Image (cartoon, rainbow over all chains, first blue to last red; front, side, top):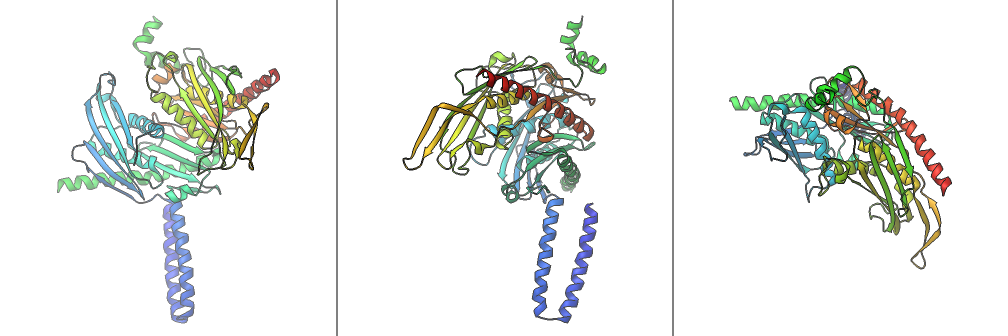
Length: 265
Length: 276
């Protein structure tokens, strides 16, 4: 689907270029201005389309903190979060579990103290981590994961989960699988927008979904919804996010490749 | 013999049941527990309900007060949910400040409210920018045996339907509120979301309406909120994975449950109105 679209885009682009040249030769000044307008409108149309079908640019820097076992600064478009992993550590006596590792997650908002909303996020991230970390390999220990929100660009929950996954990879803790979270939004016209930016979120929506998938069978690990839609649309949104999660898994691979190639050099 | 097996190897004990597609309490895998609802049992509250799902018991009391609406949403009232898990409800809950379970349940209900799934908050407005109703919804669990969210949502909806508020008008010229306590009327525009909780086991087995024992042994939990055929909320905080077929199955099951519960709530509300 995406490649088809890219093909179409390039052919259209060539066509537009060809058109420009012929146009420029034929009518020099007057229609040139007119054509610029057409070109501009077509460009905006394209960016809008790509915004819906794909996710925003992903960037990360691993091992940003010197004292943590694993850390990452992760950005997804304008959303920036920092995650750190300390562990396996000695667990507090009341938190100690005899058969597996205790996972502690702290979510720090940009300003102020964490409240009930942050507790909710922490729980989501914690249970996700409990699934992906092979916790039974380290009984009676704890791992401490801290997420610091740096900039809110619309999809904090999914960015935090992705950042935590990269930080876990960086720390070298044995994992069962990787996890990739994608947010999508159903706007008031029932159109699904993938990875919405903060402006789109603030314009209002019918529903917003965050889904996280595992890297083995791309099954659902986490789901979080706001708003209500018929099941059909819910399913479409989930499928779209599932496809988009592949992009994030590819990004993880590249990030790890880059990190280790640097270390070898 | 069976009790020894249960205490020593709880998961294995459970799996022998699951392999035979049944559960220790005699239910089928996708069977829900019996739900009992009672509305209007607390005289001092503006609206109340007691809900029992199996052994899980939740009391909801609603107290209404009048306050100035928020600056950003001047024509909306407030619903402030608060789920309390006192130490008496389960041996796993310690006394002290609210624990993670209570906080995440509160957050879940608050999210439903924020997404207009419970009630359109515009109905709580008395006069735009000046006065609006604030409904403090206190949900107290007195017996915690799994599927807390299911019971909380049923209790909240029934209690909201049970709320009667005095007719209040705002006199703009005198800048005064006029309250007529003799006449009371029920709230309008309450929606009918129903939450169904499922437990997932590692070998792809799904069970509905888990008890707290089952919740502890399971590899994951999912709570699906439906309003009729609309998926209003699917809350799956990590844990074991689900594929698309399983998601579909769960949604079908919760749709069936939603229908039954909605009928039950309506019946209860009708009878409580008749009593008044």
